[in-house]
Length: 167
Image (cartoon, rainbow, N blue to C red; front, side, top):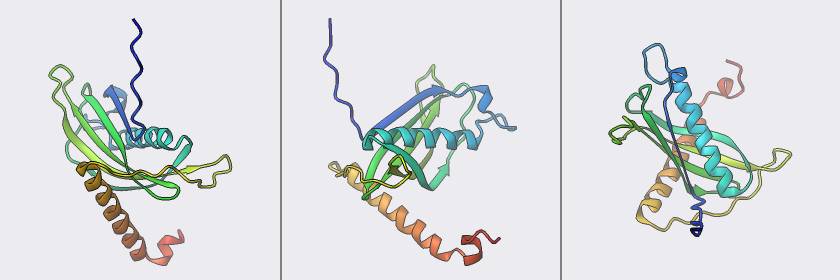
């Protein structure tokens, strides 16, 4: 029996997998760099589906490692478009992990990533607008703009020598 296909929610992407021993650090936990790679890959998938284009990472803001991920844990990364600019997409990532046998996952990490859609020459191109509808979406959209303002303020604090790469 053929079941009708469910429409794809183009604003959200979820990755699930088991944390493997190849991702472990010297302390026996998943390496932060491996987790950051997974976050970037999930954000890319979400942004590419939303925009229908190749996308690049512009910034990662407010990443917070709350608890470790253990080898063998089920890892779930949920990426959601929460705000858009003309060419940019603010993607909120939530990472949860836990014992796959119990099914109990706990938040380990969250962050905001800004992705930009680009054409074949690497030039930014417009993306579809995201309009938050639910209270949760509106709250996350405000959070995305707050993170953007904070990151912009931090850039303003950066000494010229650092910004130019002289130090």
